[in-house]
Length: 326
Image (cartoon, rainbow, N blue to C red; front, side, top):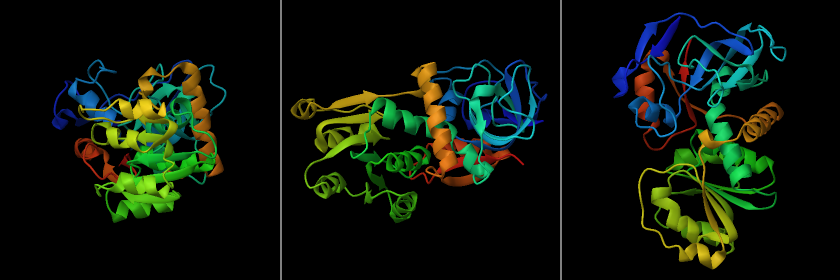
């Protein structure tokens, strides 16, 4: 089969398109013929060898997310059968052979049914973004129906799903993007209000939009730029969940003291098996009901995986980047 494989850590050129043996499904595992694979920032960090959470053995096929058709099932697997359409969220699966490939093998629990109304490209956009959004909102941020949530940097793969999950949960959803195209995407995704975070005054505008009450939960994609401004617009008892950060900052803790608010970090790698299962179930149910409609961004050929990893770390993401395997 064709796959992107790396023999060493390094720059994007370590990602090479090769012919490699097709993996076989063992007990409790499934093999999936992939149509699309998702591209995540974590995969670019892993490629460098400096990622704190995961350092794979070589040779290594990247990728945790994908969508396709079950090709074979291992002993003991009864929930899935050959021919089933599935999406794959294998970040924490005990077995995963990588999704930048024509075929992948993973623990059966990491593969979830893909509804007929969801395309394979959309299915590949669910895994890491969907689990991250669900955990940030409900397991870390403890978002409740009727509260106001700000998705700060909402036009990417995590943000668009977070906005849809929060709206379906009964929250008032505010999202930000960096240009008019992104703001239009957010409105299509169902946010109640959209603001341009390229405007230096956008946090003051958000606070005014809430009538001065502030927001209850903020899902923050770039904490090194936004954290202090976030703290200033929280409601009493508000929570900031840091999903993304790319540097250090000076911060005024009194902003948290005044409102008895909190800053919460999160990383999917730390999730417990029980919380992981809850995230999977919640996202799968939202996908089936239509509450979540994954936004697919730029598509790349499998051979262009290196460029996709370069672009995923750029700014102004629009939906989830995916690799087309076929």
